[in-house]
Length: 148
Image 1 (cartoon, rainbow, N blue to C red):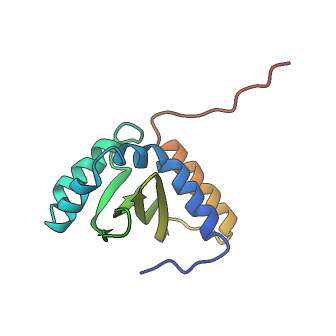
Image 2: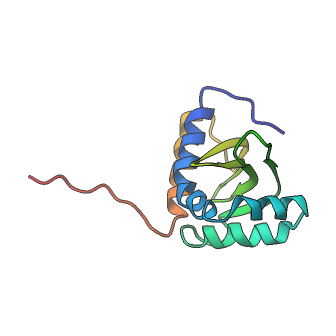
């Protein structure tokens, strides 16, 4: 099931992308050829271990998981691109997304979001997603007081 794009999709993708940025950075340290080989030979347990290892540095256990799927783009005239299905499970919400790792960049595309107790107000759901992801991180960020 693909998430129908709406006015809230982009904001939610930005929230998720910012939250998993350090995980994507860790995963980009792995050679693209290794990811491609693991995907080609359907070594999904190995990919799941790599994702779990990258995520455990930044998130509570079980928050970021490999979704048992992925793909790659590898042509003679372009740089490799690795696509990994991820499941993010912070408290109260599950996000199904595709993480794209390419060259010097990474991107995220949300396929589906399931709120356990959705609000009728999409802005409240978006705020809940941001709060839930922030609470599932090991390193909390707090606004710093301004010097006077």
